Image 1 (cartoon, rainbow, N blue to C red):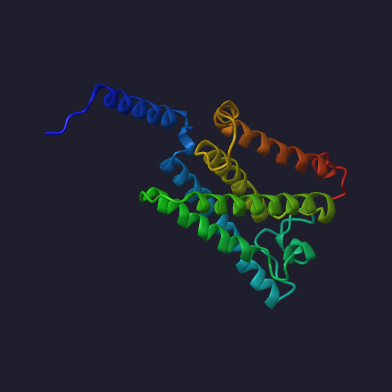
Image 2: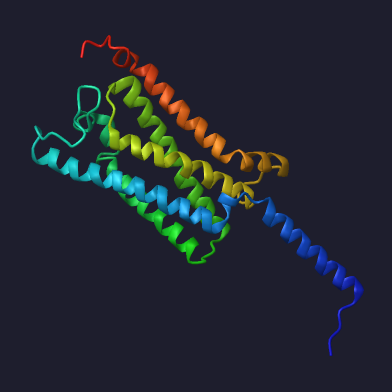
Length: 222
């Protein structure tokens, strides 16, 4: 009958303790099930917003005078934003990117909830996609505020969905060692995930306020 030597038992205990420590060091939201739910919820919200924009874009293509559901005034209008070159940067409407990208990421979230695991290269690919998506959204946000000077409500829903998606995908990959980072910095970042998310929301709201301050203070003439 096999026996375990005292040395082997100590080594096994140390290994178990190290795994337990690593597990507790990972922020709760960065663990598979909570992170899976985050992916599913944020991406469904983003997908629905993108889908609504697709339907409205099709109506605009059929009738250039079509008033979209979010044509509120000269400052809030999806239809006017759709007429700009920024709405079709790659030669086709940007919202089609959202339809595909959010669907893929929702699938990843559902897979995590079902217990699936992915290789490091897959997480790196997801990180690259989410980062590029976030960078593209930041650029679109800057164009809407400082070049087009018109807000698209459904675009802003996509912005809102991308912020926690980017923050927590990055924290999850840092906590899991997919993205190398010193343990202390990774722990601080993990503990600050929702703070970072909140600060980004505040930054977006503040930039909108100052970019459209003439509207808010009633000096725009509208």
